[in-house]
Image: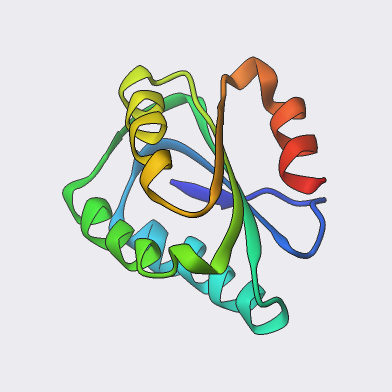
Amino acid sequence: MMELIKGLPDNVLGIIGSGTITGEDYDTVLIPAMKDKLQRHKKIRMLYQLNTDFKHYALDAYLEDSKVSLHILSFEKVAVVSDVHWINDSVNLFKFIISVQVKVFSNNEFDKAKAWVSE
């Protein structure tokens, strides 16, 4: 499931994922929140945390993720907070081919990630 992280600057979209993340989570939480932010800001930032109880992505979530990827140039900074090694490794691999500042943090560095994406 996905939930919004509250208390962030208006140009920062905060999402926390836990358990199983589904395509419905993208359709009902992430994508509408992203579109809402993009109506008010030319570029936005994202704080994306996979909580320690994250299990996996459902197949339809991978398909919905491609919709978010189409908007990659709308992002200024992305902070990924996760203790899932394959997620962190994938982000670190692909961050060099996109023109967005991306940084990976562990869950115990959440406050540091929040500060970085907000500055």
